[in-house]
Length: 470
Image (cartoon, rainbow, N blue to C red; front, side, top):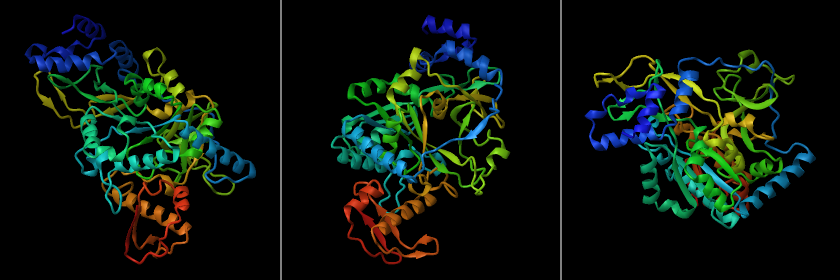
């Protein structure tokens, strides 16, 4: 054991993690030492004092207003002019190679009954393409339009980094330029007992968990991804998460608005399904644009309505952002990511002093995470742009029910049916449901604008028919 690490552990009051050290093989000692070397033990001590041994007081701002958003459809001549300029600006950024795609893909498919990275899960209604392929083909379509490959940064996790890389290799990167893909793992944080001590998952391993999607901004710095962006001349990142197969991985209009407004961090929003939908709320609080989680927004505010009966706080957060690379660099100045931490009490299996595995039946540990939306109030000129839920948000989170593979496939079919109808195609329906199975490959069109330019020859679909357009 490195004497320096041992000394730091003692100073932080965390040397209990070495209590089985002399019983470990050299390989096991190496594994534990590697985990410990990756930790900032001075910061660990500070976090224990501030977030573990004490529960931080939740600050609910006294002055909370609804956020102003750019509407999905231009509603005034000024908006139409701005949106036309923004769309062209977004295309110019892509053609100049100034945009990178940033996929957060550290999750596993466990909740879907799939043992492996969530990005491997098949989601499309006919071809059964996995999420990774859907995103790769979208980016290929945009790359062809831009005339060059869009650099693609994929954040994995400790548990799925190797399998994710192997999956891309096995499928030849789904036709994407492998030299334009940059994989890197998310950072990990130890779980703490209620006494502030780091827990062991085994005699030779800390009980570790990902440091939250906000940690993605730290991982960009530590992995060398930011340096890679500077080398490539990338100025903006299009951020999206792995569970949403209908996300627009690249949206020229959104990117153009982000750039023209001088925003360091921009976000997409959707109108909430109802007042208490479990999504974050874009608000202006204490004079700053920010996201207030559904559990923290007072219910009387969540239910407030405008004179026309619409919800006043109606801008739901869907984890789609655009970020300036210079902003991410600034957030990492001094080697620390300048975002707050969030505390959660969880049940965590651990090894006791006798070396036995304990599976608690109630929360016994504290996990700490950072959230990417906490960067918004730190950004200059942040903006929010509204998108259409049916066009861009249908995540796959649960095996059944809401946000499941079934609802996502249904929404994909409805979206592609709308694209076809906009070109004059007759689509069979039974009530509100499409009476056919329809899938349009992103290689044919990644969005409705690209699709309408293709002048598809499909003019009529029969009830019950399977139609795949590629």
